[in-house]
Image 1 (spheres, helix red, strand yellow):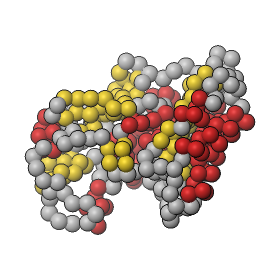
Image 2: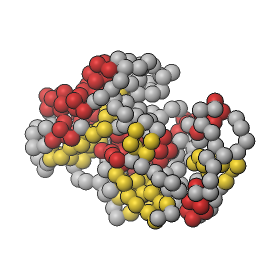
Image 3: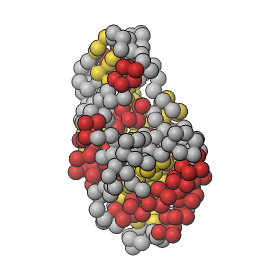
Length: 301
């Protein structure tokens, strides 16, 4: 690892100034991705900008009935926060399976999003929970939907001098639930072959789907929504057959590649299977079922 400057600003103004100060500036939140890549030389940094001292980056606060989640809040706090478990269970599903406990003590949902991996576990969960990304830069601040934050593998909408400061989660709706499920072939390969998140709101009768959202991971250059699959459910019964049919529709949104984790056809098939399961889990939670994750080791098949 080559020498670099370390900076730990205590204000947003100082952080954006450093980002605009020239050279290669890399942001450090948890460092679980950045530091290994700096060691192997795949990432070069003239300055490492530690954002954990910037006000708000480590906060979880209520805002207009929803939550503002600081971009550097580590996964273990997301995983264990009863407000998030209750209101945004798909996000806690994802937080509990990112790496091991040591990783979860450092890594953050904001960092996971900014890393822009197509296989990131938290991105589809944030999409179905309708999270917005608060970005601050030299021109002020803006909000970008989580669904539009990543533009390609390793690339985001962040422009020069901009910093992701928080994730804004809307107020939860009644009779709604969410779920995230992924498939990995073994615990030693902690990257999803395919993943799916779903959000379901039931009608007053508790048996009809009033609204739904579906998003996929690891089957396209970025996490993607499957709106046709969601629309197919609205107004219909919350049944296994309906969820299976939606899973088949969701496969059309998948554009996987063949790599060491599996062939494209296999990953497309998995997308459909996982959508069926995640919809069933989301509907069960919407009906009052447990919001604790259902895990098989570190896998969900």
